[in-house]
Image (cartoon, rainbow, N blue to C red; front, side, top):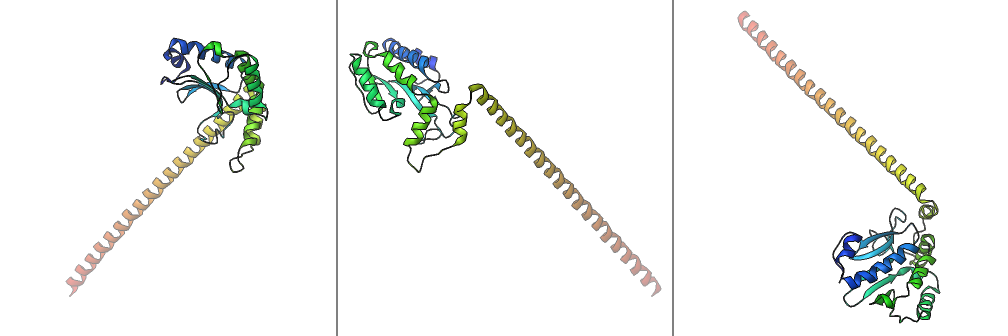
Length: 235
Protein backbone atom coordinates (compact mmCIF):
# COMPACT_ATOMS: atom_id res chain seq x y z
CA UNK A 1 0.00 0.00 0.00
CA UNK A 2 1.04 3.62 -0.47
CA UNK A 3 3.03 5.11 2.42
CA UNK A 4 1.61 8.28 4.01
CA UNK A 5 4.26 10.89 3.22
CA UNK A 6 4.42 14.47 1.97
CA UNK A 7 7.71 14.60 0.02
CA UNK A 8 9.09 12.47 -2.80
CA UNK A 9 12.18 11.55 -0.77
CA UNK A 10 10.02 10.37 2.16
CA UNK A 11 7.75 8.45 -0.19
CA UNK A 12 10.62 6.54 -1.80
CA UNK A 13 12.33 5.87 1.54
CA UNK A 14 9.12 4.39 2.98
CA UNK A 15 8.68 1.86 0.16
CA UNK A 16 9.77 -1.79 0.42
CA UNK A 17 13.03 -2.38 -1.44
CA UNK A 18 11.46 -4.29 -4.36
CA UNK A 19 8.80 -1.60 -4.90
CA UNK A 20 11.36 1.20 -4.52
CA UNK A 21 13.51 -0.27 -7.29
CA UNK A 22 10.63 -0.31 -9.78
CA UNK A 23 9.20 3.09 -8.86
CA UNK A 24 12.61 4.79 -8.93
CA UNK A 25 13.19 3.44 -12.44
CA UNK A 26 9.79 4.69 -13.61
CA UNK A 27 10.42 8.05 -11.94
CA UNK A 28 13.76 8.40 -13.71
CA UNK A 29 12.32 7.76 -17.17
CA UNK A 30 9.35 10.07 -16.56
CA UNK A 31 11.51 12.94 -15.31
CA UNK A 32 13.89 12.50 -18.23
CA UNK A 33 11.15 12.82 -20.86
CA UNK A 34 8.44 15.03 -19.35
CA UNK A 35 7.81 18.59 -20.56
CA UNK A 36 9.13 21.34 -18.23
CA UNK A 37 5.81 22.95 -17.19
CA UNK A 38 4.76 19.74 -15.41
CA UNK A 39 5.67 19.40 -11.74
CA UNK A 40 6.41 16.38 -9.57
CA UNK A 41 4.70 16.04 -6.20
CA UNK A 42 2.95 13.64 -3.84
CA UNK A 43 -0.81 13.54 -4.42
CA UNK A 44 -3.09 11.05 -2.72
CA UNK A 45 -0.18 8.98 -1.43
CA UNK A 46 1.41 8.52 -4.87
CA UNK A 47 3.99 10.10 -7.17
CA UNK A 48 2.11 12.61 -9.31
CA UNK A 49 3.09 14.59 -12.39
CA UNK A 50 0.68 17.47 -12.88
CA UNK A 51 0.22 20.83 -14.55
CA UNK A 52 0.20 23.25 -11.57
CA UNK A 53 -2.32 26.03 -11.05
CA UNK A 54 0.40 28.59 -11.82
CA UNK A 55 0.34 27.28 -15.41
CA UNK A 56 -3.28 26.04 -15.69
CA UNK A 57 -5.36 27.94 -13.08
CA UNK A 58 -8.62 26.04 -13.79
CA UNK A 59 -7.16 22.82 -12.38
CA UNK A 60 -8.79 19.42 -12.78
CA UNK A 61 -12.47 19.82 -13.71
CA UNK A 62 -13.58 17.04 -11.34
CA UNK A 63 -11.96 18.94 -8.47
CA UNK A 64 -10.60 22.39 -9.45
CA UNK A 65 -8.57 22.57 -6.23
CA UNK A 66 -6.34 19.81 -7.65
CA UNK A 67 -3.76 20.48 -10.38
CA UNK A 68 -4.38 18.92 -13.80
CA UNK A 69 -3.08 15.28 -13.68
CA UNK A 70 -0.78 14.06 -16.45
CA UNK A 71 0.83 10.88 -15.08
CA UNK A 72 1.40 9.08 -11.79
CA UNK A 73 2.97 6.09 -10.10
CA UNK A 74 1.41 4.38 -7.08
CA UNK A 75 2.34 1.42 -4.90
CA UNK A 76 -0.90 -0.55 -4.58
CA UNK A 77 -1.62 -3.66 -2.50
CA UNK A 78 -0.96 -6.25 -5.22
CA UNK A 79 0.81 -4.24 -7.92
CA UNK A 80 2.42 -0.96 -8.93
CA UNK A 81 0.06 1.30 -10.85
CA UNK A 82 1.39 3.40 -13.71
CA UNK A 83 -1.22 6.05 -14.50
CA UNK A 84 -0.80 7.58 -17.95
CA UNK A 85 -3.59 10.08 -18.58
CA UNK A 86 -1.35 11.52 -21.28
CA UNK A 87 -1.79 8.56 -23.65
CA UNK A 88 -5.43 9.55 -24.22
CA UNK A 89 -4.39 12.67 -26.12
CA UNK A 90 -5.45 11.92 -29.68
CA UNK A 91 -7.55 9.12 -31.15
CA UNK A 92 -4.65 6.69 -31.58
CA UNK A 93 -3.03 7.43 -28.19
CA UNK A 94 -4.02 4.31 -26.21
CA UNK A 95 -3.75 2.00 -29.22
CA UNK A 96 -0.29 3.29 -30.15
CA UNK A 97 0.92 2.81 -26.58
CA UNK A 98 -0.57 -0.70 -26.39
CA UNK A 99 0.98 -1.65 -29.74
CA UNK A 100 4.46 -0.41 -28.77
CA UNK A 101 4.31 -2.12 -25.36
CA UNK A 102 3.33 -5.50 -26.86
CA UNK A 103 5.95 -5.12 -29.60
CA UNK A 104 8.58 -5.08 -26.87
CA UNK A 105 7.61 -8.64 -25.96
CA UNK A 106 6.40 -7.66 -22.49
CA UNK A 107 3.01 -8.71 -21.13
CA UNK A 108 0.56 -5.80 -20.81
CA UNK A 109 -1.93 -5.65 -17.94
CA UNK A 110 -3.81 -2.45 -18.73
CA UNK A 111 -7.05 -0.94 -17.46
CA UNK A 112 -8.74 2.27 -18.55
CA UNK A 113 -5.88 4.55 -17.48
CA UNK A 114 -3.68 2.30 -15.36
CA UNK A 115 -0.95 -0.13 -16.35
CA UNK A 116 -0.38 -2.72 -13.62
CA UNK A 117 3.18 -3.99 -13.17
CA UNK A 118 4.99 -6.00 -10.50
CA UNK A 119 8.63 -6.28 -11.55
CA UNK A 120 11.05 -3.96 -13.31
CA UNK A 121 11.66 -6.67 -15.88
CA UNK A 122 7.97 -6.41 -16.88
CA UNK A 123 8.33 -2.81 -18.07
CA UNK A 124 9.65 -1.55 -21.44
CA UNK A 125 10.94 1.74 -20.04
CA UNK A 126 11.66 3.14 -23.51
CA UNK A 127 7.96 2.79 -24.43
CA UNK A 128 6.96 4.65 -21.26
CA UNK A 129 9.51 7.36 -22.03
CA UNK A 130 8.21 7.85 -25.58
CA UNK A 131 4.60 8.07 -24.33
CA UNK A 132 5.60 10.80 -21.85
CA UNK A 133 7.75 12.73 -24.31
CA UNK A 134 5.20 12.60 -27.12
CA UNK A 135 2.76 14.91 -25.29
CA UNK A 136 3.84 18.45 -24.43
CA UNK A 137 1.97 20.55 -21.89
CA UNK A 138 0.43 22.61 -24.68
CA UNK A 139 -0.83 19.51 -26.53
CA UNK A 140 -2.11 18.00 -23.31
CA UNK A 141 -4.20 21.05 -22.39
CA UNK A 142 -5.62 21.30 -25.91
CA UNK A 143 -6.65 17.61 -25.89
CA UNK A 144 -7.99 17.84 -22.34
CA UNK A 145 -10.14 20.90 -23.07
CA UNK A 146 -11.42 19.39 -26.33
CA UNK A 147 -12.59 16.30 -24.41
CA UNK A 148 -14.42 18.28 -21.70
CA UNK A 149 -18.23 18.39 -21.74
CA UNK A 150 -19.60 21.71 -23.00
CA UNK A 151 -20.71 22.73 -19.50
CA UNK A 152 -17.18 22.37 -18.12
CA UNK A 153 -15.18 23.60 -21.12
CA UNK A 154 -13.26 26.79 -20.48
CA UNK A 155 -11.22 28.26 -23.29
CA UNK A 156 -8.97 30.86 -21.73
CA UNK A 157 -6.50 32.79 -23.86
CA UNK A 158 -4.65 33.55 -20.63
CA UNK A 159 -3.94 29.85 -20.04
CA UNK A 160 -2.72 29.27 -23.59
CA UNK A 161 -0.53 32.37 -23.46
CA UNK A 162 0.93 31.12 -20.18
CA UNK A 163 1.93 27.81 -21.79
CA UNK A 164 3.50 29.54 -24.79
CA UNK A 165 5.67 31.82 -22.67
CA UNK A 166 9.10 30.68 -21.46
CA UNK A 167 9.26 29.74 -17.78
CA UNK A 168 11.23 32.92 -16.99
CA UNK A 169 8.54 35.15 -18.51
CA UNK A 170 5.81 33.28 -16.64
CA UNK A 171 7.78 33.83 -13.43
CA UNK A 172 8.20 37.57 -14.11
CA UNK A 173 4.50 37.86 -14.92
CA UNK A 174 3.53 36.01 -11.74
CA UNK A 175 5.75 38.34 -9.67
CA UNK A 176 4.21 41.39 -11.35
CA UNK A 177 0.70 40.14 -10.59
CA UNK A 178 1.77 39.46 -7.00
CA UNK A 179 3.20 42.98 -6.62
CA UNK A 180 0.05 44.48 -8.09
CA UNK A 181 -2.05 42.52 -5.61
CA UNK A 182 0.16 43.71 -2.73
CA UNK A 183 -0.19 47.33 -3.87
CA UNK A 184 -3.96 47.00 -4.03
CA UNK A 185 -4.02 45.52 -0.53
CA UNK A 186 -1.84 48.36 0.78
CA UNK A 187 -4.05 50.98 -0.88
CA UNK A 188 -7.13 49.29 0.52
CA UNK A 189 -5.65 49.32 4.04
CA UNK A 190 -4.86 53.04 3.71
CA UNK A 191 -8.45 53.78 2.66
CA UNK A 192 -9.75 51.81 5.65
CA UNK A 193 -7.35 53.67 7.98
CA UNK A 194 -8.44 57.06 6.60
CA UNK A 195 -12.09 56.17 7.08
CA UNK A 196 -11.38 55.10 10.67
CA UNK A 197 -9.62 58.41 11.39
CA UNK A 198 -12.52 60.33 9.80
CA UNK A 199 -15.04 58.42 11.96
CA UNK A 200 -13.05 59.27 15.11
CA UNK A 201 -12.96 62.95 14.14
CA UNK A 202 -16.73 62.97 13.58
CA UNK A 203 -17.26 61.22 16.93
CA UNK A 204 -15.07 63.82 18.71
CA UNK A 205 -17.01 66.69 17.11
CA UNK A 206 -20.30 65.10 18.20
CA UNK A 207 -19.04 64.80 21.79
CA UNK A 208 -17.81 68.40 21.73
CA UNK A 209 -21.22 69.61 20.49
CA UNK A 210 -22.95 67.72 23.31
CA UNK A 211 -20.63 69.30 25.90
CA UNK A 212 -21.28 72.79 24.48
CA UNK A 213 -25.03 72.12 24.42
CA UNK A 214 -24.95 71.02 28.09
CA UNK A 215 -23.04 74.17 29.05
CA UNK A 216 -25.58 76.36 27.24
CA UNK A 217 -28.46 74.58 29.02
CA UNK A 218 -26.67 74.99 32.36
CA UNK A 219 -26.10 78.73 31.75
CA UNK A 220 -29.75 79.20 30.82
CA UNK A 221 -30.83 77.40 33.98
CA UNK A 222 -28.56 79.63 36.10
CA UNK A 223 -29.89 82.75 34.32
CA UNK A 224 -33.48 81.70 35.05
CA UNK A 225 -32.68 81.24 38.75
CA UNK A 226 -31.14 84.70 38.91
CA UNK A 227 -34.21 86.22 37.27
CA UNK A 228 -36.53 84.42 39.71
CA UNK A 229 -34.55 85.67 42.72
CA UNK A 230 -34.62 89.28 41.50
CA UNK A 231 -38.36 89.02 40.82
CA UNK A 232 -38.97 87.62 44.29
CA UNK A 233 -37.03 90.47 45.96
CA UNK A 234 -39.03 93.11 44.11
CA UNK A 235 -42.26 91.57 45.13
